Length: 250
Ligand code: GLN
Image 1 (spheres, rainbow, N blue to C red):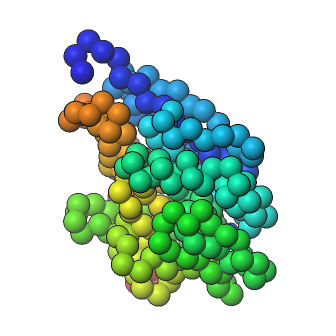
Image 2 (image 1 turned 135 degrees about the horizontal axis):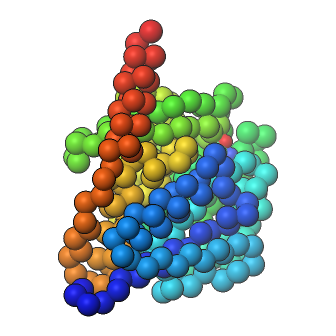
């Protein structure tokens, strides 16, 4: 990639409807970390009635929200974007989905009032609301990568991912469903999680993985990202891990 300025095109899906608990921070983190490496970042907002062109984007972000907004998004997703989004995901392009967005990529989501919202049916999981909400800070561990991630969850949905790969195993909190110890789901280059708060500022390893994967897919070659000074990020993360672990044993 010598002498060529790399570029990453981000699509923010439904930013006007799904943007709970600071989810926008994920896009800001990708932009910040990419620009620090001299990579040009373009952000496009796509919402109700807009077409989604899978060839235009390198990273798609799909945030979380409340049941009311999810109902509106579910209908639009199925009517106008489902097939193109499936193509994008199957082509191994990078997507990050949080909570409400995560739920809508699966088979269905049954809301807290018992209404069954159809999902895009791209990923093989389903979500049903429980009688309580899972609210609080969360810590998970990814054994394969030996990485620990922190986040904040607030959802009534319980997601069951079957044999799909989770992002990590629960150390503190509830994650996918409060029963099987899993959190999130990874399929190809699609990362789904309940972590708001936002996810990427506190977990820079994931942010860089998304950027690297997106660039490698786009330019078809190995990409090296220069190290950034993540001292503050890692201090914040370790502070949360230690505090939450201590609170959990009380
Ligand atoms: N409304 C969904 C639930 O409660 C998603 C919530 C969210 O995105 N925070 O499970």
